[in-house]
Length: 592
Image (cartoon, rainbow, N blue to C red; front, top):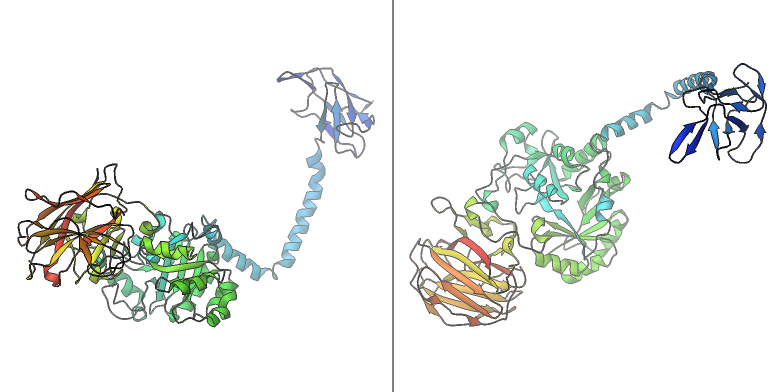
């Protein structure tokens, strides 16, 4: 069968001249079976069926001819330096019959295999549906952890960032995810079988209700349960509803890494069934988190999950050996000894640590080779710069970087005073308690140093006029500071006693007592519930403390360069009665 070549609106004899293609009517061309070399084809017919050995372009440059019998491709040479490929214009019609046959055969084959493929089709449909939740993960577990080292650790939002936002709430999850931190999500199951994001099996610690989660129905939790976060985070927070796990997965799965744990044993199977049924793609961006005592690891590994298994102080190496093949990442507590952390790291798998509240803890842990940091204040511990230089305590919202001597405990949290004292803050715990102001740390000094200003008052005066409150500064680290205690790093501490005496002390790491530098300044004794104003000037060579609500009350510029660290905070000093604790407001840092 001969096929028709040419005859379409794109088949013309042309010559390239510069950047143009010019038509060549009447041009004579030879026909070949290859783009170069090959054999000339002379068994040709014109469109009227007459034999020809070459082709001649029409008066408008158009080209059309019948090729040799069976030829399905040829190359025409008009003598302009190249050959032009041509395919049969009637190729569609020639293949139509073959296509019909193929379609019929495909239909027969599909019908024959339909019954056998039914189960596979259901599975494929489920996977396709899951793609609605995770069509293309923006972040995958392996990608996120690739390159994690002690010098470049990965940070996760413990309980969604529970030291700065109500724990395990959408407010916490959304803020932490927006800042780029993976979410640690704990779940428990209710009486209706619904999974809720809450750390404890009981409602008591974090909500306005008491009793175990599994004694409440889904409707009761959704309508009657709210967080109780104000004692830890400040009265400026609105209490938040609890969050069903499905809401978290639907919003964050694929966009944010999730470290997911069933906290109660009764939540394990419901969680596994939920993931299997509705989120089969979850292993791409979910880490299965579990205690070393879990029996859930075989399930997790069979589904392709990465596993993070955390230890307790009693975990033996033999127990770890028994589960090592099912573990991708080990977890250590910050309370573990240096030696134990090093032993776990030495096993060779990535090690994550929790709970981490301070930059000094990050430095210690990464120094031993830990590559993952789970913190309820990840914004603070993952950075090394201050977030601002002036307080907004009137808003009554806990700041990132606030570090009491005992973390995550409302008893030691910064307390925001109610009206009429809005703007004042205090530490409602004694004795020797303090509160680190990491939001402003490390202080960024100017060429001439820096200045700290703040107001302080005693709402109730100490019965013992020698007791004092004050302010510490100059520490190189954010480890907890406690007056009259041995501290890990040194610094300065200014005090104002109940009798009005103002003093400046230098504290050496490891020592329980301070060394006074400069003179004791006799100022007017404090008046109950009356503000006093202070100024601390730190230059490259001197330290000075002033009380500025009166004239001439200053230690003068004391020549001392011992401490120039950037960490600082509020101190209850030696006060022993919580009702006589000092209050603070209007904190500002200024470069000199």
